[in-house]
Image 1: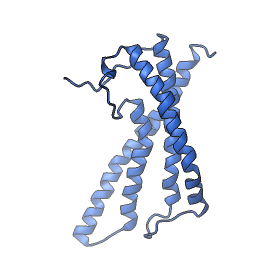
Image 2: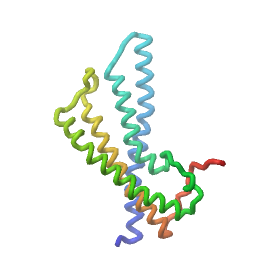
Image 3: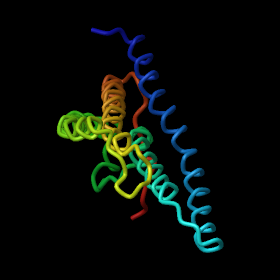
Image 4: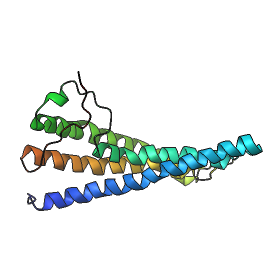
Length: 182
């Protein structure tokens, strides 16, 4: 059984991966806005159209969504139907989060990863390109599916550790940040 001193180090390391990716990918939103603005200016002011630039916005949007999902999970930013959750004690919320991670997040992430592996592999086998003459890296875009699942699994393990620590009284509870006044 791991010692109490080792779990926080592992937890910090796993959370650190999520934080690093999340903070890096957040900058892509700014880049995406600038490129989209340039596309609009080029099209309407100069009648210039660029498939590569338009596809790059789609690629960046996919990267923000898919690579930011674990960061959003880390910061409890996903949509939650919490009719009862917010009224539970810290231990009650920890149990819900632990069971949800164990029986929903991890199995679904594994299912998607396993199910999409052949899809991504076949795209890599032919080095799939854009049919419209745009970005020649469709296989890289499809690879984001597996990267997203890996990041969600990393954060899922961190969530399991965190909730177990809360249940053992070794960490403060997860007070829901998104409170609604009824």
